Image (cartoon, rainbow, N blue to C red; front, side):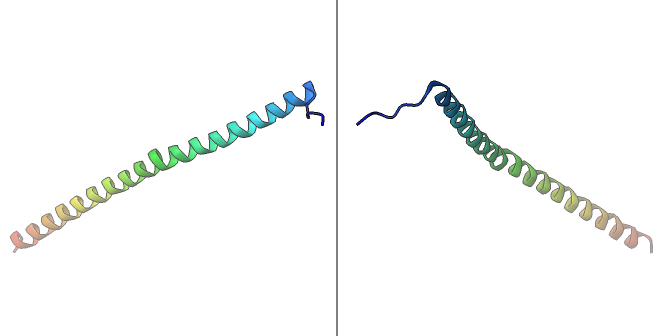
Amino acid sequence: MRPITLATGTGRAYLRSMARTVLSVLGVLLALYVVFVFIIPAVFGIVKLLLIIAVVALVAIAAVTLVGRISGR
């Protein structure tokens, strides 16, 4: 039985094709890693910070309104 060999030209093309596929998969995996490790937690952190600032502003406005109504009489 004869071993299967690739011609030089097609072997290089095959390796380039496989390298492109492997690097594409690695790129997608890296992009997913960046999204799930950095982007999503950063967005949730910003939303949490804005929510805390909104609650503090609401309490401050309520306190000023309450003091204004009590001392206005």
